[in-house]
Length: 281
Image (spheres, one colour):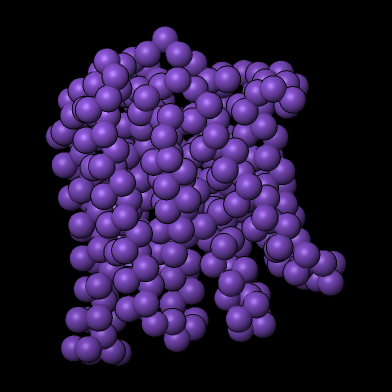
């Protein structure tokens, strides 16, 4: 299990950044739709981005390594990933800080827009950092699907959980969005695994690595299913008694389960890096 969990810091980094960028996507959409600010999700997005960056140091070791790695922007996708992650984190933290302090509010809209654009491009760079290698499990369009669909799915559930008590959000719409995205992610992984099993020797080895973690994949599926169930269970609660106090926050529990499932899924994504001699470029 050491070979799997030694990349836990990298996994937390990716999922935190995906969740943060996904939240900023929904913050921007609802900001322009309702002409209001969403301070809580913006601040959580900033906190997650910072946690993600800090957790990446567990993988890089000395934080100075991040600066040294970033010095090769012209030819290294990993350098670009570090640069655009830093840019996005700086922008989203500035956005959250302006919302919190109430100062310089005149630049809120451009800062929000820049944060969203930096986040969307950062997801592309993060994906490309792995696609540019020769690791079969990474070198496919599935990597793009994983990064963008996961960001939208996690962003949707985080945003709803943080705002549904303050707004009359239609949880059925969010639930369907989350369910569809989860289904698309699952299907893309299944098709990708089947494709690997029919590919080159290296691809078949990647497939065998994937299938060797079948128990972990089952756990991820169970956590995902529990998340969806808990999310939709709030409709039963609200129909039976809208005013009844319930200690357990079902959307929050659903978010936690889905976040854990995403971290575990990302560990499987990274384990190929451990079992090959090909590194990041």
